[in-house]
Image 1 (cartoon, rainbow, N blue to C red):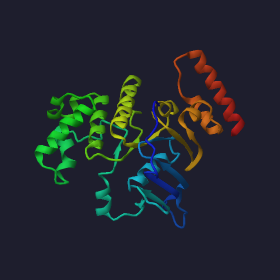
Image 2: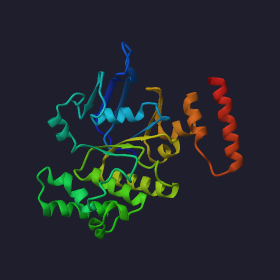
Image 3: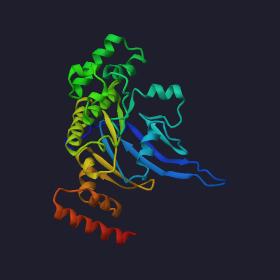
Image 4: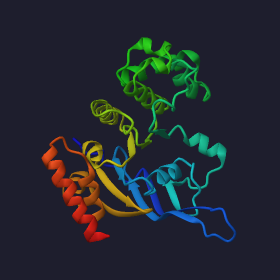
Length: 284
């Protein structure tokens, strides 16, 4: 990714020794531990790519930051303030600073509301006047490169990429400092993915927002990330700057993830599959 995050004296988000456990049905069954004492930081204006296979715990970490997953032990601090176990009212107040963009643009938008209603709703509930809210909607639609008349249309009238642009606009409504992006381009075709990733980069350069960018695809992180943390079975197995980790990974698990990414050349793809099979045999 071009450019570096703005230097700041302290981190925007600090996660220390985070453990998340879920209870399991059955008499005296021990809980399932989804996260095993994770420690991470995100600086202001930075994109941290969180990469791992399905079930690695990466989405659980994102949900813990959003207050949607139960934290067993450890701490999450935002701008130096503990946010691990906030009361409901305090968590709602924090939503202006921490927002989310989820995977599926087809189900994340209310199909019965116009785009104007979807985007003004989070503003109106915080006391913004109708006129100011609609002015902000026009500004947001311009941010995400949608026409002004999109405000009067329903989500079903848009393509997947356009709906994800609306979801990004909704996340930006209240000028957040951090956006948790949970697989925000995985449901899109490759050409649309590239355009939406460029949109994320453009918005970050314009606003200084930080991203926790959750994905299974190292090539996505190479494009958008400043740093990368690779997760396996609820633990971080490798961290580093995006260029290094996505081109010369040290950990065998990261190497397997890199080899699993498809390439357009069939001969090279076959070589990568063979390399991945050899690596799996060596590390199994």
